[in-house]
Length: 124
Image 1 (tube, rainbow, N blue to C red):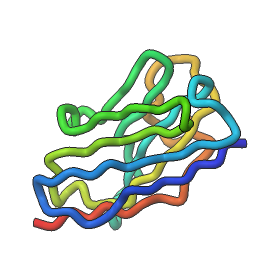
Image 2: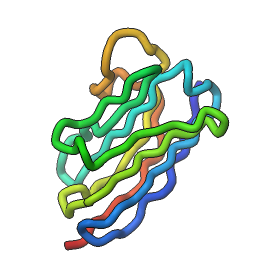
Image 3: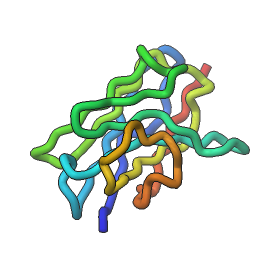
Image 4: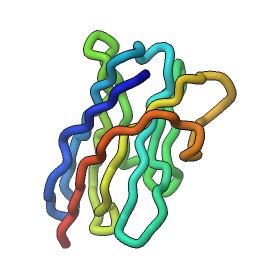
């Protein structure tokens, strides 16, 4: 079992920055893949970024604005989002996949554990 708790969402103006955090318990970060997804109103949940041993993967359209990092001592991952746009408004979810084998994990069903989500609102 993996428990995930997100934090760091909020309201920010376009062009601003936010850092989301996801604290994991039950497994160490070195043994799992941690991902971020987002879901805007009336849209499907979509991949944003993921971190696995030695690799970090990002949604193509957001590359250059995102940095995903981890603190193994705190068992926490951080998603730094810069130059935010109104279209980035969504609920952001942290997720964990217990299998680290096989390439980037960008699909929802690859993740067995999910956090409760944190709202990010970007005003124009």
